[in-house]
Image (tube, rainbow, N blue to C red; front, top):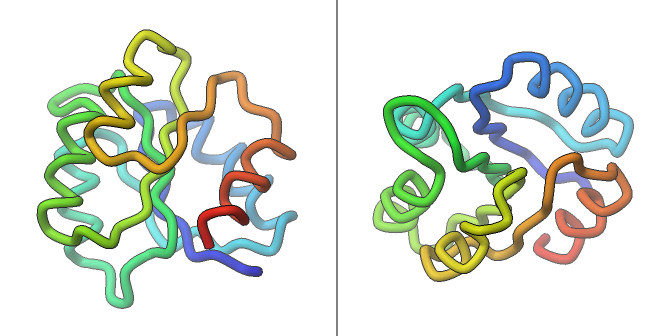
Length: 119
């Protein structure tokens, strides 16, 4: 099933890589944000809302856990999947409302499985 996806990560190269991988999996990237505060702005501006938000943790201005809480405050139905190299924040991410936690470097098969399971 195709998902519309918002990518939130401060690594511009990772955005390009995820764009390519997600398009191969027949998913559509509908937005990009490079920090947690921008994620909220971009999310608010998207209509319809994305099916899935791929969220990094360590970013300037606002981290992923805080951004997740803010987005879920706006829309409790938002589906946020964490993708982070920092496994120590897994519990915080899940407590904040993330539906899944994927560890970088991520395998595309794991990412597709996580997206599919939450669609």
